Amino acid sequence: MNTRSPLDASKLGGGFSVRDARALGISRSRLEARDLLRPYWGTRQLASDNSVPARSRALMSRLSPHAAISHSTAAIVWEIPLPVHWESDVVHVTVPIGLRAPQHRGVRGHQRTLDTADISAPHGFRMTTPVRTWCDLAELTSLAELVAAGDFLIHWQTPLTTATALEEYSTRNPQRRGTRVRRAALPLLSDRSESFRESILRVLILAAGFPAPDVNHEVRDDRGRILARVDLAWPDHKVALEYEGDHHRTDRAQWQRDLRRIEALQDAGWRVIRVSSNDLDLPGTLFDRLRRLLEY
View 1: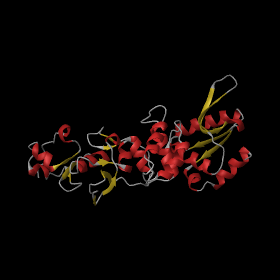
View 2: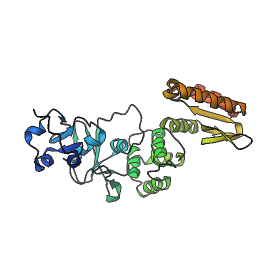
View 3: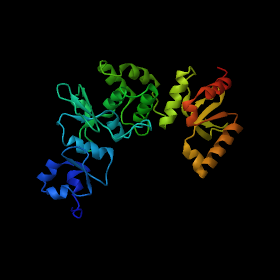
View 4: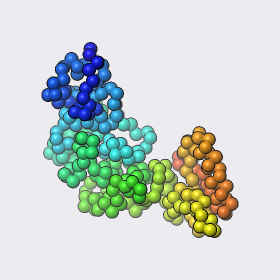
């Protein structure tokens, strides 16, 4: 089989339909080459690009022009953080009410109201906007996971939308699935959270009844100089929580920076709780310590 002549990716993208390729003059034998995958019937995909956007593009080349990539698949394309256990090999597609939702291997179809304003095409195929994607995620995620997704979307440095836009969309569309979890998530959103796990930790703390912490709080000395920026803080009690992923343990330079930061905070009278993924799974011990420090 021929694998020597490269395909023009600028015309076809990472995924495409056999029909479109043939219209561009690509031979059938070339479409059988080993450097191409067959993700769905009548489609091809560059083996060198087995990404979610490429598979989404391939699928959309065979679907109704009114369909759109949605839910967790759209979230992946928008780079919205999702739980690590979620698989990315299933592509979610939404079609307007009245059309048949596709349901076959590797595809999960949804039939929903789908307005023009809900659609964007930054990668050359139709997909739901960040706002609509967040609302659809409420059908699939927990409260904490939805808050983490929303925190990412409204982050003050790189916002894809605003908390106001999320709330307004939810208010205009109260009949959508996931309404209850969206309503619970909206007042918990923060534009200062900087990681998925940090957001999860904050929601767990709030759900346990603790007072709301400051997010990414800057601790300063008596001269106003910044000593450290901590993930979650209760400044009146001089208590801070720091979530530490694996890179804090495996990166020696990061580990040494962490030690210096903790020492500076302790010298300034702060008490710091270092939190790991185990604490998120079994937070009881963490909560007990936090109650003692906050006298709560």
